[in-house]
Image 1 (cartoon, rainbow, N blue to C red):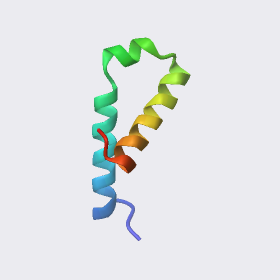
Image 2: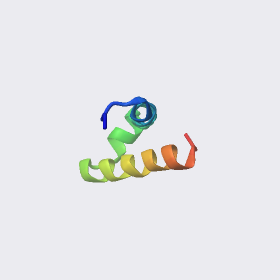
Image 3: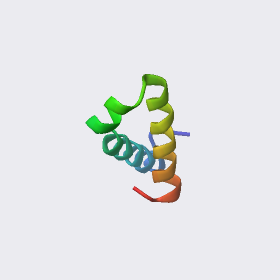
Length: 53
């Protein structure tokens, strides 16, 4: 099975857009490195699974 098949391209694009949206100067300066990573993961999960970006 291909890893970069048509199904994965859409998911990767959603994740990339969610990361780009989350990486604002406000968020980067507010969170510590560890907390930033956790908050980013939660935001991406909400965007991809919930469709609330």
